[in-house]
Amino acid sequence: MVNDPAWPRARAWLEGEGLDSPVGSVSVLGVPLNASISPGRCDLAPEAVREAMRRLSTYDVEHGTDVRRLRAVDLGDLDVDRARPEDALEPVVRAMGGAVPGFEATVLLGGDNGVTRPGLRGMAEALGLELAQTGLLTLDAHLDVRHTEDGLHNGNPVRALLEDGLPGANVVQIGIASWANSAEYATYARGRGVRVVTRRQAASFAETVRRELEALAGRVQAVYVDVDVDVLDRAFAPACPGARPGGVMPWELADAVWECGRHSSVRVIDIVEVDPSRDANDVTTLVAGQCLLAFCSGLTERLA
Image 1 (cartoon, rainbow, N blue to C red):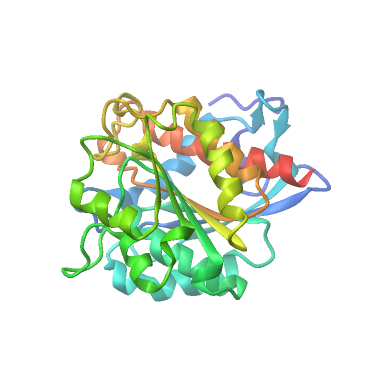
Image 2: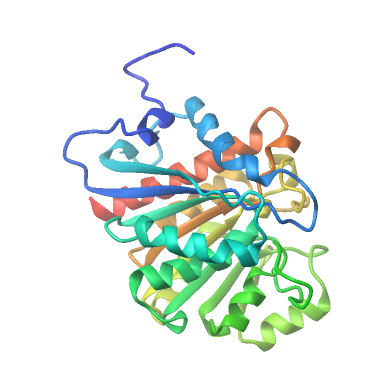
């Protein structure tokens, strides 16, 4: 690649190359959990996303923001790629104790959606909060409330958190897709008080996220955002086995994630369900990298 000092690369920023007098800091932690219903290689995603950021700049032209105004600290990857979600809980929670305090926000690079349960519980413990004091906002095509009797996986982190004690009223799920869920699980989620917003109901995706996040923040002390990249239209997410036609567009997701970065209640975000072994022309890993940058652009706006 051409080395142009006037075109700073996001990978270099992630490796510590920033501007003087940063407005704040963000930590990035890879959690390559890989226990999906659909066998794959989500464990490859953290490094694939980092590598894709060599092809992305640090400048958000839409908002006039350079993310180098934030200090980025990449904490590397946890050794959980062969762990069951149950066994990953303790190491993820422990790592969050070093990834959350002292930073304005934390980005978790999954891994599959099983990251969300230990991620949220780790956030709560790191901030000294009870689960009931935290909120979960998911950008996802799926409800993720499959039964847990046969163990944990990427299809049941929300149900597992509800069973852990997270109140259903503290959960908002946006982008839920037809033909990607079941009547039984939709009834369960709504019966537990979960706020379910379908893709059609979220026609103005970023505005819906902004509005729902504001309402959720009024009920909790900290919000965890789960970005399941399969909320995208399948044309833009070939590396996401769960993506379906009719999902959101990449620019809609970027705008929504920017809103999450800008909101003071959001302390942790995960980016999950990318399987680089299924990608086409790196399109999905590039979108995941753009999500990380869009969140940090919003965070910069929050702190400036």
